[in-house]
Picture 1 (cartoon, rainbow, N blue to C red):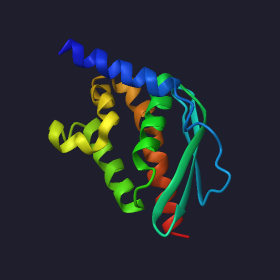
Picture 2 (tube, one colour):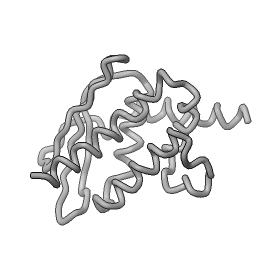
Picture 3 (cartoon, rainbow, N blue to C red):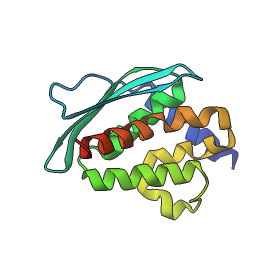
Picture 4 (cartoon, rainbow, N blue to C red):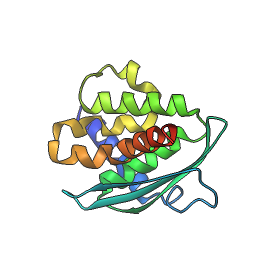
Length: 146
């Protein structure tokens, strides 16, 4: 099992170093700031949503490797998907972190985000891992209530 955790660590490091999704969007229909005071993570999530589809998404801000990697992974996952599908993936990710869903087959839709599965064993890091996901969910729900 140790190899799995090494593989997961590599995925997290790769996504933390990846700058592809870390920028401001020229046009965005959704913007939300997420902040985790306990770790100092502070991100602003942007998305360009048209006809219920997430055409593009990006984030800016700073934080620990886990929050940055998690934001990057999430953006890779939701780009090109419908808002409904993105919300389903957010809920699945949060259920994985809370250990409500533990079956890898059920989690395979999360792709690289499965690398964050073992964060649930480190309560202090959970807020870092879920920051971007909660921020996206809040942003979509606020957008709907406008």
